[in-house]
Image (cartoon, rainbow, N blue to C red):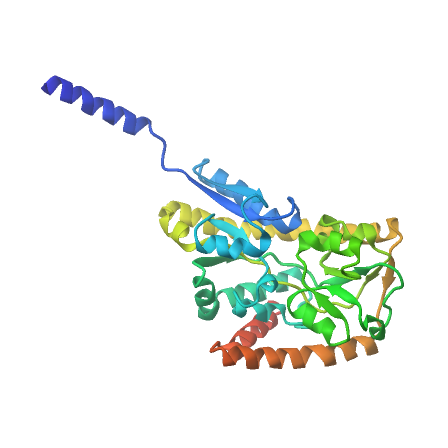
Length: 336
């Protein structure tokens, strides 16, 4: 009997020695198709796989796990461990992040967008806000200022936006409303069909999305310098999933984020270099607004929408002024 027990112990020890270390495979919910907007997530997977010898990997799903408007809900119930979403898709679910979508903040570069996003993400208010969804903010998906593609006669003055249906979300939609446009909140994946069917007359996107969702293929004109703002689309992880990681895997994840962001910025630079050539190739007319028109737009949208946002968020018990000041201080610091 002792001999059998000794044999069983040796066998168990052999199995334990042969067994691989515990592996973590996280499901990641994004949408559309692989593109610059998701390049930091793809790069994160590459870095994690290499750093952990394949013991921590990401299984990235493009629309197979959830719709883009439901990704935060999926994170909250642990349906997947990581997801990307845009704050403007559901402003009531993530009110603190909407400060980053206010129009005419003055952000000029993707690096500045990263700086202001990370500053807001680091606040207790934002952490608590996303904590309601069992979510932890991991990294932004910075995008340049949105501009519009449209069909038909160009809106070459602010007056021509009167009654125009613009696909725009969040603060950008509010900004266009101040000049008489009708903001329509369709998701990125719905934009082409909405434009084709006439549900919207124009679509506001960053350059990569005009490529990815083919709205540039329908465009007759493009607003070169309207620059009303952008949307904020963080990558979040399920808090329980993060807490269950080993210390080594937590460290690998956090060390990989800056490298993934550097990759993202480099990839986006290629898109911006390519953009001018695509406009010429497709014979898309560039509409450039006068400084007088731009100043009118800013006067109508920037301060009133900002002040209303601060008043509304404060009434909901949020440190709205503090969030706004944090953002603006980070923007100033990023330029020093």
